[in-house]
Length: 120
Image 1 (cartoon, helix red, strand yellow):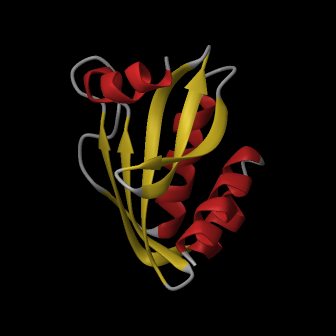
Image 2 (tube, rainbow, N blue to C red):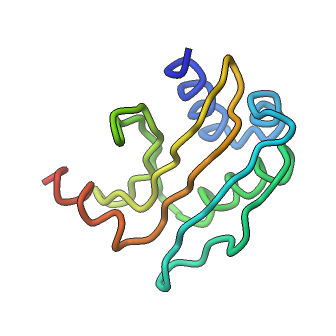
């Protein structure tokens, strides 16, 4: 089930479909972002399906030329943002049933170093 939800979120993100994302998100979803000191990201956790959907889509849109793909991260399917052959973000999803309940959005280049090194 987790793989199917990740794939559905990926498709909705590729289409910039906020409405579809809100249907895939639990009403009480929370998103925690980590941009480190070098990338702008939400400082406080974001709560609620509508706000989370729009923040996620804005983050993706802020990276012109970005491509989305699924990749195993910490043993679970996740969505990676790739720009010029470099992973610029990772979206990890906590699913229960057919809904996403939590999102960890990693944009911090220092934390993406290992995933980019393994791509080479």
